[in-house]
Image (cartoon, rainbow, N blue to C red):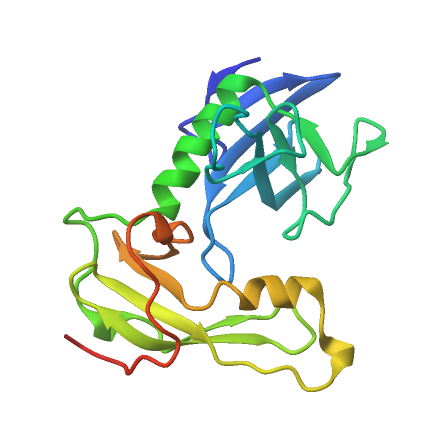
Length: 214
C-alpha cells in the first residue's frame, strides 16, 4: 500500500515485508526539532524520533542535509540519537529501507521545516518567544536561553546555557547537541520550530553577542 495520508498524523504509508508502515513529519518534541514519526499499521509499534538518512552523491564535493556516505539507499533510523532498535515483524532493527518516493517526500517536508521561512506566516514579535527551552533528555537537563533577536530574518537565537558538572554526566550526545549552539528558532503560524538548517541561509551569530530587540 503506497498512498498519501493527509487525514492522519502520518502523511504517507508504504508496504514493508509482512505489513505496512506509516510515517509523517512533526516537531512536537521538547526542542521543537523536525523529526519523523512512524507507526507499524495494525500494531502498537511506533515512535516519534525517527530520522532520515540518504546516500551521498559521489559526483558532489559536499553533502546536503540528511546525506551520508554510510548508506547505499534511503533509510529511516530509530531513536533520537539513532540509538534504538525496535522489534518490527519479529526482528530488532536500528533502521529500515525506505522507498525512494517516501524518502523524497520526507526530505522535502523536513527541509521545508528546517530552513528559514521568509513568508508572512512567520512571527515578527520577539516578546512572544519563550525565554528558555528545556531539553530533559540528559542526566542534567540542557537549557537553551535567548541571547539575540534577528529582526530582519525574524529569528530568535538560543544558546546553550547549561554546563556539565562532573565528567560522569558527559556523553557524545551532549557534546553533539552543545555544538549546535546557537540555534535559530522561528514562530511560524503560531508554532515554535528549530530551523536546524538555518546555516544554509544565514550565518550564526557569535556566542558572546549581546541580546538585541532591533
